[in-house]
Amino acid sequence: MGQVLHGSATTTETVRRAIQARQEGVRAAAKRYGVSPTTVQKWRSRQTSSDARMGPKEPRSSVLSLEDEAVIVAFRRHTLLPLDDCLYALQPTLPHLTRSSLHRCLQRHGISRLPDVDGDKPKRSRFKADPIGYFHIDIAQVSTEQGKLHLFVAIDRTSKFVFVQLHEKATQRIAAAFLHDLVAAVSYTIHTVRTDNGIQFTDNRPVDEEAEAQAAAYWATQNRPRIYRWHSFAWACEQTRIEHRLTKPRCQWTNGQVERMNRTIKGATVKRYHYASHDELRQHLQLFVDAYNYGRRLKTLRGLTPYEFIYQNWTKEPERFRLDPSHHMPGPNI
Image 1 (cartoon, one colour):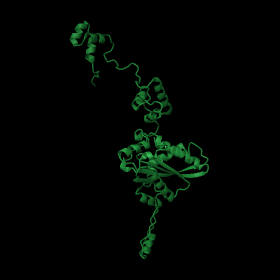
Image 2 (image 1 turned 135 degrees about the horizontal axis):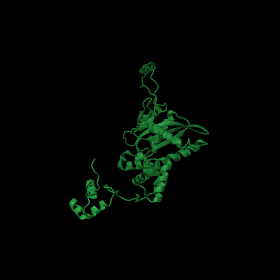
Image 3 (image 1 turned 60 degrees about the vertical axis):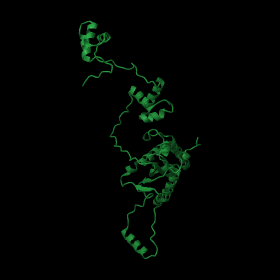
Image 4 (image 1 turned 45 degrees about the vertical axis):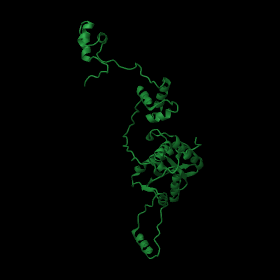
């Protein structure tokens, strides 16, 4: 491997060692090697022939003060959060903090890499880049002092916008009503929903061929067309012109985004707090979802909140929207 010299170097290490070894005058050595007398004196006064380290003797930030760096280092060591999460958490306190200055600060203090966790890391794959309007829907069970509730959760694959409801029962009609409420709550057009094969979302009973033949024979004797019974959720999709997709059997990871959101909601509510009534849980759940949609900055959205990402898409693709998304912003529009 060749020598690495800085841009202004006029000598190589071989020439420097010769200057240090030869016992001749400064002017004679300068003339021999085609350098200035100052260069000869410099290398004769040094013990090595390598370039000295460039830059400041004690590296420090030109943006962050020593107090700022102390806050960043303490926060990183205490929370062990990734780089982007640290950035989003610290920016309200340090508005001048940027991602690059944070990264350099962590490198200077030797904490730019988080410690490895024991165990194999699962292989991760990204979803296909779909336009906004692709929702994953699932049902989870939560409990309060009054009893059990069914948590209906929907999350947009692209914008990460979340919509939730709590119901005492989980029936087909309630699932269909949840879909209608979701359509009304979202400012853009929903084109696809993905659910599991639960009875609330699909009629997956096996076909009885004998009964089907008897029904076909009966309706053939009538003078009116055969009447088919729609599944409530399927009829809601038909009314709203939404494509309904189902997960494959024993392949729950295809709906894993909403499964992960279920764990996030439970971890922030029922697994952390005790609720004396259903209304108390409903109130806290709505506050959490509003904070997530309008205040949670996500790495997958490049630091934007779900609402900011939706508003950004409204400026780029207004044809996908039914109304201005700012009308759904909580509080007065200033």
